Length: 313
Image (cartoon, rainbow, N blue to C red; front, top):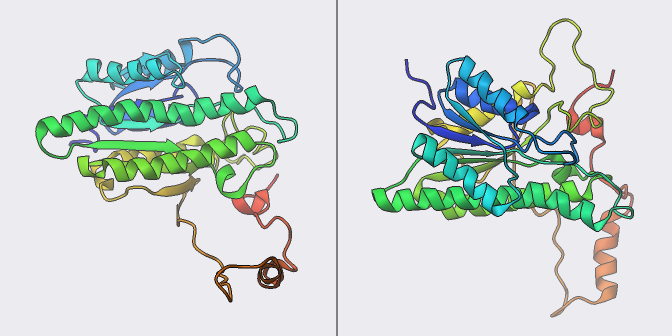
């Protein structure tokens, strides 16, 4: 019996640990040949020497289970290394069909304490990293579509975060990068649809070394049940979005965690005010807008527990 991704080639970035590892294993389990990318630095802030070990271990895990995988040790925030990553997939498997952008780092700080480097480094790895790999994959798919005279199978699954949706006081760099990824995703979806390529973004909730602080105190089942925040809950959605079955899912943002997928609507207008004359005056704006916000809390984002829908232990 054929598998949904039989004959396809996939790249998963940041796949040496956590979410990326679970996603790479899922795609391989569905039949894809996988390029496992990871820079291998030990620090979640991107510190430490690069190492081939994390990517190699996941690639070997896939091969041991009967799948096909190669490891790539490279920094996706570097344009040339991202190009080499895509080329490795093409050289090894003859083409690229699926790109999962997952690589990222954290350098948390309040906005008044954050340094320029802490801002730039997170934007570079997350947002620039997503752009770099997407650029080379899109070039590949566009060329294939022109050569064949018709659409190709191309899938981009990007990784955003609810930090972009609800805000994260100690992560202005991370939240901004994740918001930028959504904009990149929807723009890419529009640009590549004509070639048969889709681009979607997920906001995963998963317990990894990147989120160990966020989920500190949330219950871990002690009765053998799978943790609701296990990365393995996120991976099946990535597998679905990578498949032909998701051909009509394009430009979407989906929140996913333990047995739940939520489709996020694009922002809608909550209120509208019209000027009495050709343009507004200060007094008129004060009379119209100020009452709308009176009595509301200054920050209407959900508390962390409400957003997560979880209970603390």
